[in-house]
Length: 213
Image (cartoon, rainbow, N blue to C red; front, side, top):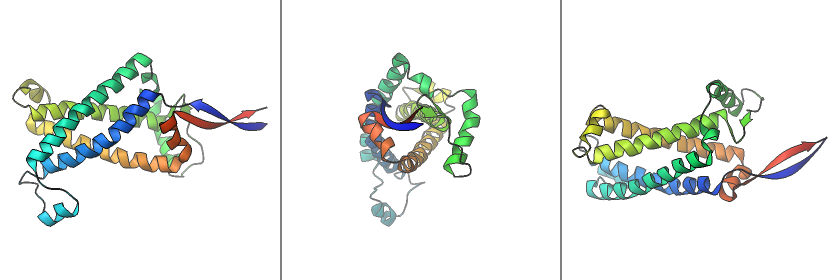
């Protein structure tokens, strides 16, 4: 049985575009969001701490940056969902019932608790599908709650739907925390997977080993 390297298409241009545009957007929005967050006297940190991490509790500046890039983030998200729907790519990221159980097997393999390699359903394994689907939900929550918080009077119906202003702010904050945690795990997973996976997100092509008898 012989093996040879085959080059396959992994990520279409639209997915790669959204991925790389979202990276700086999320970084800027987290920074500007923290500027807004720590402008509140309840959450204010000592000035020396803010200076050490390059933050200032500036409400005006934080709102200006956050709102401007929130619009771009929303447009990027809408383009992503539009692509998923019309291309049929949504079939690769919508998890099945079995993915919830299989995701545990993927985690066990990544933690080196088992040597059994995770199964890949067309493009992604079960853990990846759950992660990418969850991030899409979190991104939607960020947009919806963000607009509700920014325009609570004009969107009072949305505030009520979310359970009140405090609830909307709670969902917005902890959705951001979840996105940031995903970001660090994602970076660690890419580093673990190696250059081949990283290159695939740049070029759209991936090298795989295939076997011939």
